[in-house]
Image (cartoon, rainbow, N blue to C red; front, side, top):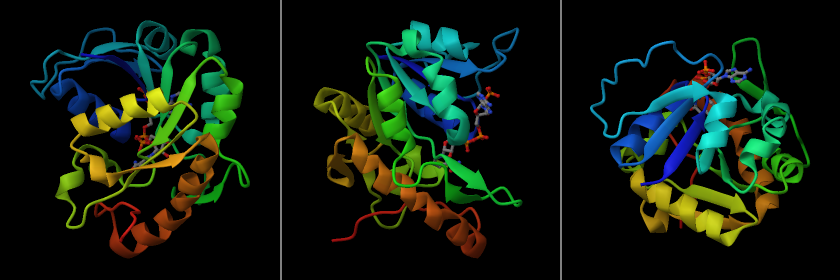
Length: 215
Ligand SMILES: NC(=O)c1ccc[n+]([C@@H]2O[C@H](COP(=O)([O-])OP(=O)(O)OC[C@H]3O[C@@H](n4cnc5c(N)ncnc54)[C@H](OP(=O)(O)O)[C@@H]3O)[C@@H](O)[C@H]2O)c1
């Protein structure tokens, strides 16, 4: 069992929390404003997720997943530098500007990436980028797609990527679906793939998909 903190409790964060708790990990959900009382868990997952503010979540867990809005994540996570020191930070966010209909348009960091900026801002933290190239249901149910999806990994630390790949395995990802692209600079490629997303969504709605390699 690993102690995992998830910052952001929206579609991505709550889905990952359910699936990782069901796989036996101890999850702490990091809210901007944690609930006064622990909400009833309807998933039956054991152990039950804990709830805390984002700073406490980062301070009290061993692996932290960033599932908050990517456009403001650099400032937010930089402020948690002490709490994140010595930890693995798994960044699944996309840092984009949005069109009026709420869909991603331009990259916040063209010629770079949020993951690289995070790694530079958090030198004592091992940043791994993954899962940002698919609609959220695919993250926790990759086998549901008709063709196997690709789960990319980018990061400077080999052990951190191995541990992250193990968590992907707990979410149902087969090893042959996981593509380690290399160091953290490779995240600028996967972060740029988000530019496909608004066009796919406008044509096909929120039907689950992943941007994958075909061989
Ligand atoms: N949706 C997808 O299919 C998808 C796919 C790939 C990657 N992503 C990325 O994953 C991240 C989360 O996406 P999502 O769809 O789960 O978004 P979402 O449903 O809007 O959830 C984001 C959560 O982050 C927290 N949050 C919002 N604003 C915040 C702020 N200013 N400071 C701190 N926390 C804040 C909120 O949790 P609390 O209210 O508990 O604080 C919110 O529920 C984004 O970066 C997105 O680009 C999404």
